[in-house]
Length: 212
Image (cartoon, rainbow, N blue to C red; front, side, top):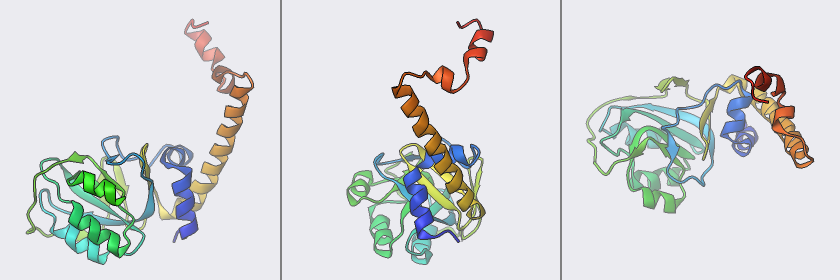
């Protein structure tokens, strides 16, 4: 199980760095965005599979998740309802839930931003939901082409969301740190006058296309 120190380290490294460092995999599609671009998020995935336009399972999941968990909800990308709002946000914060990633919409966005609760979603919808349909928690969910398993590490910021499998946390951190060190050297070289063409060995490719 990933430690709190490792989770914090992944959050600080950032979603884009972790995504590239673990072999350009695990990124959710660009439609999942933070409602507040300034937030950062990292925690263990508590997965929820629910029906479109029904939030019964969200009320249930909030009570079952543990402090530090990230609710990862597959609401089937339904865009005509907001199954999450300010009331569930306040409940989640009281429990200590770290944030929400939902394959669907939310509402009460301004209040959620004021509360400082990290939410990543497909959009906003003012429409309400029912509370009638069963679902599942603690099961693998599919968002886009990424499978999220319970306990995977969710890392999110302005750039998007990346999923790190539990078994790969150590290697993801190590390769991310190595990538950061390499990019720092590149930034320093650019300041000293080196071009990105030289740094990335692009001269031959450009020459092949007559771009000289």
